[in-house]
Amino acid sequence: MKLVTAIIKPFKLDDARDALSAIGVQGLTVTEVKGFGRQKGHTELYRGAEYIVDFLPKVKIEIAVDDELVDQVIEAITGSTNTGKIGDGKIFVTAVEQIIRIRTGETGSEAI
Image (cartoon, rainbow, N blue to C red; front, side):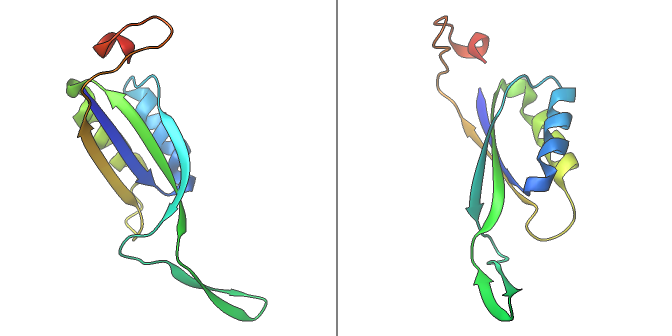
């Protein structure tokens, strides 16, 4: 089992959710986050004063999946969120040792 974590632009969340649903992903966790990468924020003008926005709003999606689905999940996320512009985001894949469904006590793939 793997945990796929994607940091994407907020306006691409619905596209990513639709693409993931289409391949059979049943659940995911979404968190609103702030951060920066190579773009290192940007400068904005507000009431004539210039200020630097260091941390840009992003959305973090976390999905626990079986090993067989990892490549499809990555393709679905990249295909639905790619704008070709800086700041599109990143995807991290990490191994998951154990998953337990609290309500039923199911473990492993049955708990996903």
